[in-house]
Length: 299
Image (cartoon, rainbow, N blue to C red; front, side):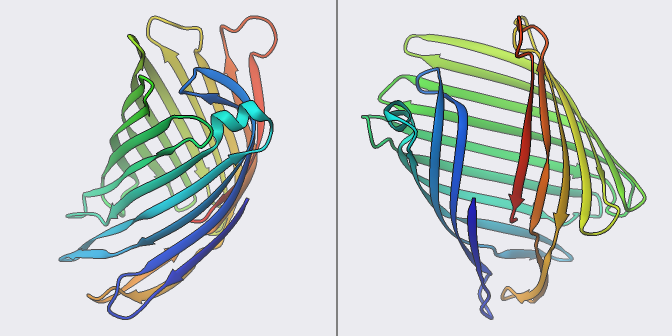
């Protein structure tokens, strides 16, 4: 993966940013329009432009990050994978996060719309999603309540295909000093699938937990585990785990957004680790899967 990011700060104007990224994804993937499992070697070429204004409300503030993104996706493995994967996508996005209102409530959220045609067949996709998360607790406190809601709707046209998913979650986050943080969440997932004149619904309970240990401001160790259990259908009940070692180098900058000086951080994080997934009800071999992870996070 190759990523280039540009930030522009002009006095009196909100911060602006742009990005160009080349991403190579290989291996096995699910093709939702055809309910098909396929091997691929897919390259994404992505261009991104956006602005990041800040709205001040007394001593509190709301940070926005909104923009547009274009992705040119091409697969080079074989004819079948190119037919399924080759697509041009246009995306609009909005992210927001706030400081703590009344020293009690902070909010994080996102919304996106992505659509575009496939180039090798008469088909297009439309993907809409949104998430809203609330953090209740004192900024200087050790314990916070986290709750949120997520919704996503993926459709294909002219095929009659739709995948609609909602997620509701709540839990607690506990800090032990400045270096250790433990989070426990319970999530309830509901999903609907429509294919031609048939439809199906599924529900799942997903308890999860994570531990983050930061011995220094730049180094961190993260461990996560989650258990997914279906309601009425248990063939895909599984436990997932992940362990990552990360190195961060934030870039700090004071900028003027037109209403005053504000401190902005641009974190750059490099992570390596391993993921594990175990399916309890699969027969024979292949119940447990391990995957190495290499991740670069720019925002």
